[in-house]
Length: 132
Image 1 (cartoon, rainbow, N blue to C red):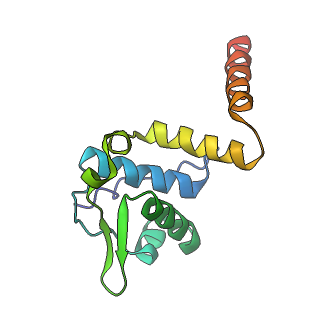
Image 2 (tube, one colour):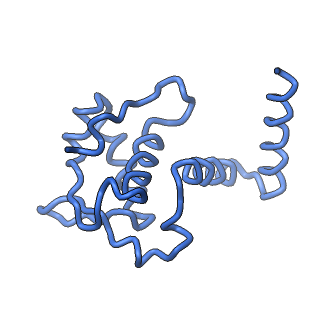
């Protein structure tokens, strides 16, 4: 059975669709849903299955490859990379940690420094407490 068969995009989450796809695949790789060497669906077939843009899946796959989760072999497909080569810190990343990492990258791209990111998170947590 395809581990992505039950995956559904949450359009109300506020998390970009490509990040949701990336996080789900990274989670499945980390949790053993996809074994090392397993072939992933093609970009086109996954886009059709999830009813999303080819470019969205492509962006998720490119990021997963850049981070060492998967490797693409022209003409053969995309496969789960050997996680032991990535080190213990990356191998233990959960989908929540990946979401936080993406948020940090977005903050840094917007020009925030580490202290600004921490202050932003603290402000949002305080806002949630006040709203309760």
